[in-house]
Image (cartoon, rainbow, N blue to C red; front, side, top):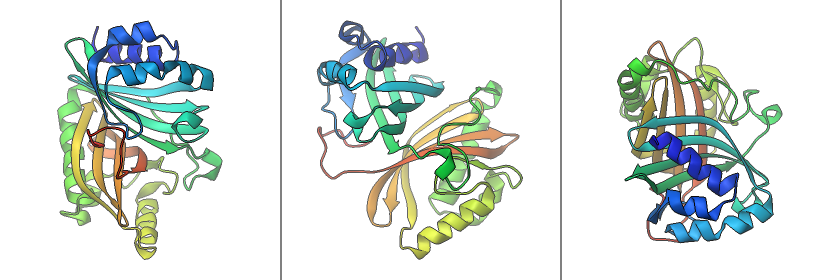
Length: 258
């Protein structure tokens, strides 16, 4: 199986079929967990399967991208009170090694209905098809430069070098569409003392027109994880999805958020 196929089977075993035996075959015994609330090791997550099934949780996968041994899923979890809310939107990142799922990072955020967002879009709708595979390296380099110059603050005035001035579809529920919407939201956050700053991006995964980045930073004074997915078209970022979550000081393991 490809890494993408392996990860989809593992997620199905955990959240759709609730099959402990299948999960045991797909997860490495020393599975490294970065979800702050879940202990590390395969046994911990496999042992949680009966409770997941009883809870009625469901997983709807919207997007799948992969680069090498890293696979990213963009997912909605319903009946997800076990994870902290009725409905959560999440990005899950999996690392595959030797035919097993060996490591997992995620970032979850309560879903906001499209009727209540600043842009009229939901947190998961929009384009899904992976295209432009021949432009993967070019698009990844574009997003890496955007992260460095704009989100890390090296040269924020260069934002129009990276983001389309004509089409920028926004799925962050607090930000309007277009560059004007982004600018207004950032200004409002700064005025409220909630300055957003990215400091490090340890994970970047690209496939064709999609580039995913998992970053660490602060929102105000709060340590925060920013998981972003960008869609690139004709050399510019034209669509953006994300989840934002506080990084807790105490976790169920010693692996850290990243």
